[in-house]
Image (cartoon, rainbow, N blue to C red):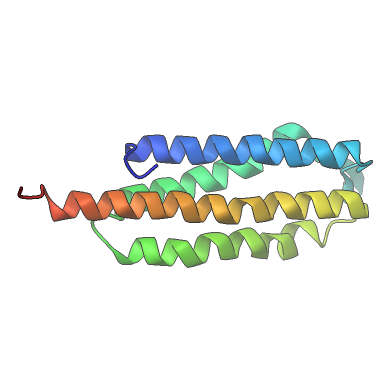
Length: 141
């Protein structure tokens, strides 16, 4: 993954996150999760499109920021390796747990958040390697 262009790393990581989380979501559905919660006094359903969007958009934005900034600011990679997974975990407490979802839906959506952590680590590491190689210049041989 480290040899891929930055845009490919971002796109591949985003695609993997969407596919993995849609599989997790499908397992949750098969296990009986309703994915219904109350918002503004009405019942709302977390559907596959929502899972895909909440997997793809924040990840793609964050990885794009890392891809753009990593070659100029080395600290961005180190920060992203901490902040990215931490946000994936913290959003369980701020988004999933407060919702009045059934247990199966809660566990499934929490698992979707957790799957992002290793994907973030792999992608950010690849972007960091690429940025280090770019700033080091050609190797004399």
